[in-house]
Length: 190
Image (tube, rainbow, N blue to C red):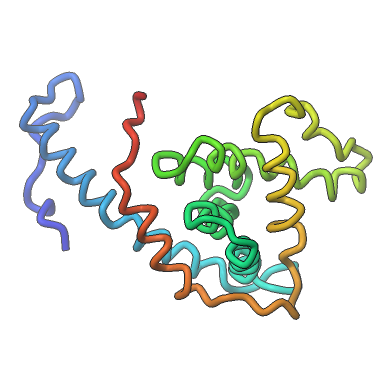
C-alpha cells in the first residue's frame, strides 16, 4: 500500500501549491510510473474473454507479438505489437490513440506513429465493406513511416485472428514489457 494515504498536499487549487506540495505529487507520480508495467500486464489479462472474433483480444495481441518476434523484430517493436490494441480495454472508441499515448514516453517516434495510425491503416481491409475507400491511409503516403505501418498491419495485425496459430503465452512477453517500461520516460514537455 502506498504511504500517501496519510500525506496530502495543502492546496485545494493548483495556483496555491508550494514546491513541497508538488514534491509530494511528483513522488506519488514516480511511484505510479514505477508500477506501470504491473498495470499494463493487468490490462492485457483483461483482454481475455468473450470476443466476436474466433479468438480473444488477448490471443490476437499475443499472435501479433509472436509474429513480430519470429520475424526478428527488436524488443521495443515486439512490445508495441503486444500493446497495439490495449486501448480496447480503456478507450475502445479511439483504441489506437489510447495505446499510442500509453507507449509514447518509452518508444521511438516510428513505433509510436505506427501504433497511433494502425487503426486507420487497418481500414484498408474493412472500409470497402461499408462503401468507403480502403486507401484512406494514403493521405499519409509520403510520411516516412507509411510503409512500416502498412507492413505492421499486413504482417502483424490483420492476420492475427487465427485460432490455429500457436503463439507464445503472455508470460513470455512480460520481461519485455518490464524492460520497456523501466526506461526513463521522456519529458512530456519536450
